[in-house]
Length: 122
Image 1 (cartoon, rainbow, N blue to C red):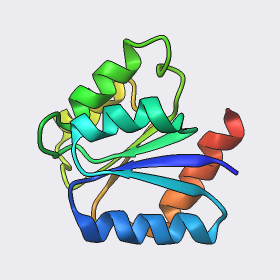
Image 2 (image 1 turned 30 degrees about the horizontal axis):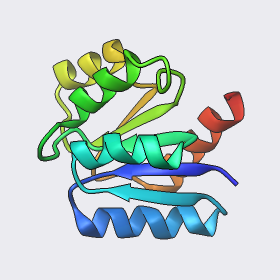
Image 3 (image 1 turned 90 degrees about the vertical axis):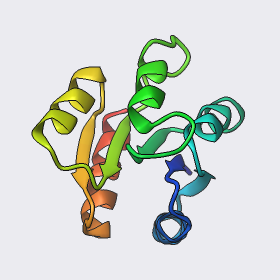
Image 4 (image 1 turned 90 degrees about the horizontal axis):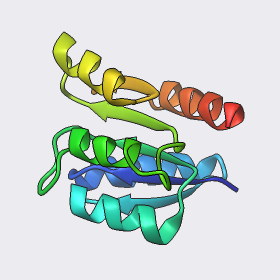
């Protein structure tokens, strides 16, 4: 069973993702801000991360930067899932090291397919 960290400040989004992931036998661990996301990385050892860009404390870009500069977390696949649809946001996330980028609103099945592809490659 794979563990997926969901980092999003919207409670309904976390609940939706947690529910959809559990239907596919993933274990979901949730964080509501960037600081909590970094703490969950340490205590839950996720196999992948679904990361919102706009969160309190540390935004998703900062969390991604910290992950990619850490030998412990640099290998973990990250899908950015965010309402930020600007070309600069997408390019910045990919340059920092996001493995994939989805814009909200999104199709949950597409997210699950992209996640499964990343975890299979791992």
